[in-house]
Image 1 (cartoon, rainbow, N blue to C red):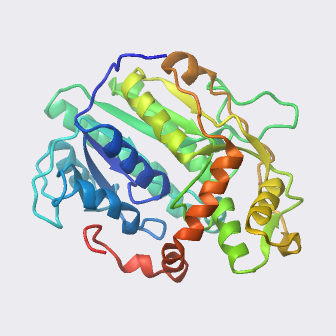
Image 2: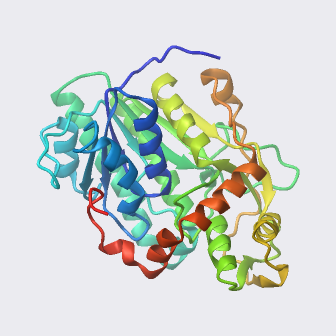
Image 3: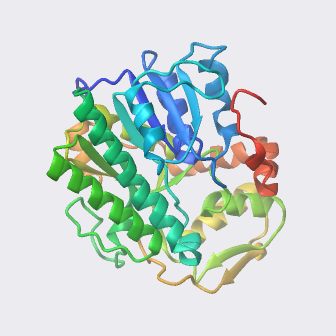
Length: 366
């Protein structure tokens, strides 16, 4: 299906652009849309890594085609966000004038369930208050300078809660039934986005994706954690019985879906994005060990985490029928490429594991 874009941005602000999905999205947009400028806003928390942006910075920064800009900052700082949206800010690292964005792709979030159990307040601040801060800045900016604009809110399947073994996959009509502080904070953000659309007629679209995997993922999530620990011959902790089921989506497929939602979707719409690839956690762990030639004796079952959702599955038929999007990656093949990325980028892994990436603040400097 070849659809004509309903909206064609020339400059996009991507929040959380130094994180796993955000950095992949930055590269995806800049490599496929030669007329689009990208402004990254990221506070470089533990999961933000300027090393993820060095490729785009080299090709598209001040020594390249000049379409990439980076700002270290907090989404809760309304004045900063307002200046970026108004196009009145200069890039702190270079002094370059930045373009006025006509779209915001909002990916900045605290995203790890285990951390949300240990400290829920940080998730409420980033995911709820941060989203409201950007929504309000967009509202004020469009009142000041009315123009065609889109706000894309990137959410998660976890807002729907858990499925039983025989339940049909989540659709966009499924009620929000979050079970962890993380998913509750994302559901709160989703509700705020809906409220700003309904109350202020703000041009908002929400996407809800299944579990992502691919290069540059911080090694606290299942796949990179198991890869990096197996490479070091360390025990691989598996929660409970390991039979929890997730729908897996390669990050490149997710990026293409986000762009389709932004440019082809209509304000107020919600789209599920899934890989049509349900896998049990234990099967993924075993597959990683097999690819790496490591023994299954490394598997160590540990006490299950509180409120651990048993199964997620996404019905992505709406985005397929409306926008013509479908996942292209085959899981086994893409998983092997992901494993190979971690094998060939050991210096990236070591820097992250030692926390050395936290000192780096400039994507233009190696």
